[in-house]
Amino acid sequence: MPKQQLLPSSEYRILVLGDKAVGKTSLIARYVRNEFPYQKRLHINSDNSTIYQTIIDGTDYTFIFCDISTISEFEKLKLSDTIPTACLILFSITDEKSFTQLNFFYETIRLKFSNQSLHVPILIVANKIDLEHDRAVKQESIDKLKSSGFDVYDISIKGNVGIGDVIYTAVKHLQYDILEKVKPDTVCACIIT
Ligand SMILES: Nc1nc2c(ncn2[C@@H]2O[C@H](COP(=O)(O)OP(=O)(O)OP(=O)(O)O)[C@@H](O)[C@H]2O)c(=O)[nH]1
Image (cartoon, rainbow, N blue to C red):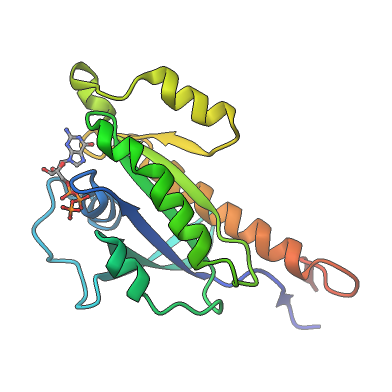
């Protein structure tokens, strides 16, 4: 009997949002090209998206990264729920305002996706941890977010620390949500031989 794999879609959209200069473009450039600092716009399509194919745990993936600098860009985004979508909201530990903006981004995303049939995971990313000496956001404030149940990841794009973990976690969240959605009754997520 032919092998049939009933696994989640391998195409994922990853929206990267956050205040000015928190490292949104740098994150995509680092992940896709291992480039830091990035060469201006070299890798960005005209719609500010970057398509990247990779293999994770032996499976092929296509990621569509969308670099969103302003809320008006975000609101203009045409989204369908055919492509599973995760959101990364970045802030910089050296910029208190970028931290206080988190709530605004979080709520805007939740509203935008309120009609989506699939749950959209939102991960919060604390960037520039290499700049500990310039820290403006207290660690206790970040710990408080974590203990309230938010997924918060500490990264340094410059130091190439933690980026792979963030993307990996986003994808695993998406797969889990898709499997939960298709799980009931007759459909099982398994390999039929
Ligand atoms: N030290 C340090 N600098 C970083 C890090 N990540 C990004 N930067 C720097 O922060 C600045 C802003 O990075 P960008 O990637 O342009 O930030 P952005 O969020 O895309 O900015 P906008 O497009 O203006 O919204 C650049 O000078 C980066 O080189 C990091 O982890 N550590």
